[in-house]
Image (cartoon, rainbow, N blue to C red):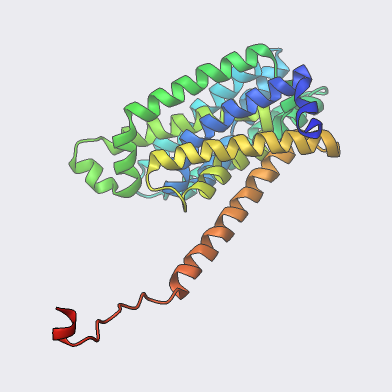
Length: 292
């Protein structure tokens, strides 16, 4: 039992755990819609698109979170604007923004002589460096994500399964899509400080994807994804402590491992259901006078 509890007796590991739990909940709210709509590439582009804002903030001694928010807003506006062009597919627009923002970030980084350590933290995160004020910011971000998810649930649902029907119902799919991009940006901005942009997709995509085969509703998938993300956070911090591995990477790797285990178990369950023999109905072979 001490093997399980000893790491979490340390204050900075406790803060890391709480930070990971809050991020898991935020990513569950946004990531479920990302998986349902097949927007994993967009999530990857959004996470890397934060680099220019973070680099500028570090270069001028500003707040990294504020820089990330600014970049996320630019990416959201860019994807929304390019998505309206009839001559350009959405994937092409996302790819161009992805490369453009990443290139701009690298150019800014190349002008700085002291950004190497900050860039490493940006890419891979530092979950063990979570501060008390970071937890407060994450709590506010979770409340905002929860509010958006509740108020826009019907619109998100219609957009995810039938965008044309969303249009006929007067749900304004373009505005809904922009709002969904904002929710995605919020989740990535909240996650990058914990696990970094390269690993943020681990918590954003893996837990919801692992939850969907077992959930009977979108809300159920979100709850299960949050639980799986919390499991990955706890297990990742525990393994990182005892194996002396990178904490953020261990959390993300465990989240992806849970995805593969979930889909393996789901495949075996469905296979057994297909191979199970059909129930045989017993026929009463007695004569009518014997059964009366």
